[in-house]
Amino acid sequence: AQSVSQHNHHVILSEAASLELGCNYSYGGTVNLFWYVQYPGQHLQLLLKYFSGDPLVKGIKGFEAEFIKSKFSFNLRKPSVQWSDTAEYFCAVNAAGSARQLTFGSGTQLTVLP
Amino acid sequence: NAGVMQNPRHLVRRRGQEARLRCSPMKGHSHVYWYRQLPEEGLKFMVYLQKENIIDESGMPKERFSAEFPKEGPSILRIQQVVRGDSAAYFCASSQQGAGANVLTFGAGSRLTVL
Image 1: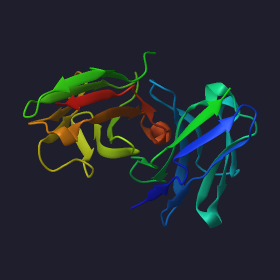
Image 2 (image 1 turned 90 degrees about the vertical axis):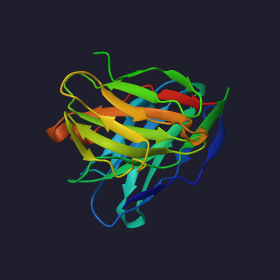
Image 3 (image 1 turned 120 degrees about the horizontal axis):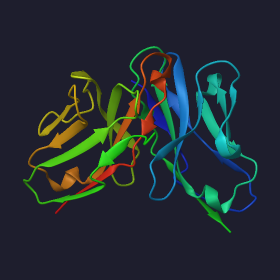
Image 4 (image 1 turned 30 degrees about the horizontal axis):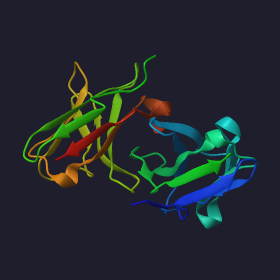
């Protein structure tokens, strides 16, 4: 079974600071990787996904993530955060080609100070 | 396209009562998933259904919980004889068949509070 670790539970940044949220997974096979965002009071929205190909994935709202297979990592980055990026961020994985249910990390709460 | 619709958004039950949560998938989606989010935790998979079939219920508690996705109407997650530990946010997600099946679209969630 796969598992996902998000080591930062709460990150506080000032506007314009750079962001990197860590995500590591454990699974012996090929995986699909996702980052979801949950704004206050809203549902989860897909930020970006990686299935195959270029390990640097660009998503919505200026976010990107890099899949490093040797490190089992899929860290989320944004060069300059905005107050509106305040939200909870979830990394998720599923096994490619088989069952499609996602395994989620415990989430990282990002607070951006104006 | 209304997206994934869940209702009720908030539900309060007393211990021992039944809770029924409903989920209508996105138009064109035939796969439904239920997840539970306990306080301070990430989402945990519960069950995966297609129309009239339970595909994977490996995340469902063995007792008191059941799910269905009938031929007509929404998917229903049913919790019998609720206990305080059932208080959580329950999220439904849906996906397409085929190449789109790996991308889940989530609803806004149903928050259950057990008194």
